[in-house]
Length: 438
Image (cartoon, rainbow, N blue to C red; front, side, top):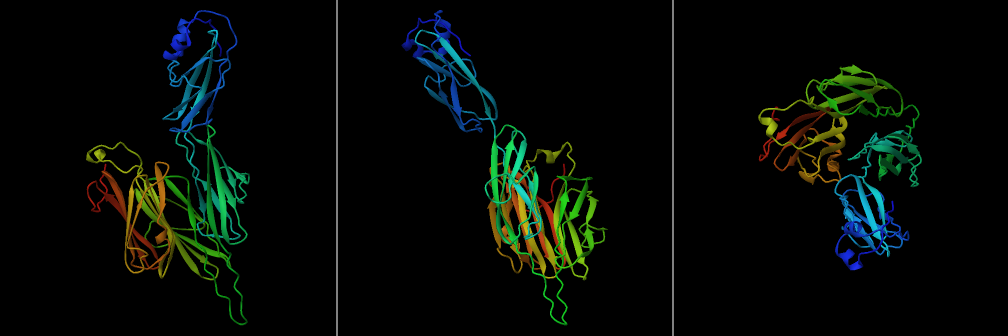
């Protein structure tokens, strides 16, 4: 946009006032020698990121910037100007210029400020095997909008053209470490990329039968995944087995859906259940192959209460938000349990304290602060992702200053899923307690 007016005010007076005053004071003249325009960088800034504006105007003797959208052009009189925008949104920035003959011109741009998305994904199963399909699922988030697209680099060549969408599958022919990348773009065009290394174990060699000696049977590999998103009391929660038998076929799949250690609640490759109470629920799957060998896997399912209006004394308490989730998954044996994953999802700024008692503890204590770029982070407790003996007790505390925290205790048992207990830690206390009711 361009306006014109004549000369009649000095350069010194213009520098001492704002371009807005020049517009009001200059009489008509009729020159067209001045034009206004500017560029800015970066083109899609994030909140808190400085933005540099550079005038590309022609024939300008004086130029003034309106950086805060108030219509007054005296935020800066330099060729370049800088502003930082605190929050996401659209902001109008204007430049006004004055030519040698008093003619005026203006330029306006709308600056879109966008918090970039956070790229992240899960892979299943955790114990990947060469020649077996690996399922990849994007769990990316965007704080001020939505994730518009996702592209995958599945062969490590740096090009994100192998798959599109929120999920993908990949198979690696040999054991080794493979780089897998995910690039996501939000609804305003901001991009984030994550590259993870997936460790792939070599496929088990088929057993070599000796004359007159039957080959040893390899037990089935057990795994299962819940389907859907967050689970609430009264929801139908579905599970699907990902189990397979390396050297035969699966004969039976039996589910323990109520955590009593007995696998008689359902049979088959899929199961459904409804949890009547909120909290952590242990679900187990026992798989038997055609030769009679069996193996067991278990996982913890966090079930939330249906949101209600909280009133009474508990409503005045400040809780860690979102409330921490402790996740344990692995397989059980007569020698205890092999832990495949032990992790805590907690708000950034919280503190995780782990204590271990019993023979074979990899460490007696472990302390980890929760750090991350977003509001929450998942902390893997990898030192305890190993075989643990029966009788081992792991206790996890998640604390926040002046807020209700969480504690979880696991007792490892022989040939049975670990026994789990959960509760709260009240502000100002280190004692374990039952969570206050609303």
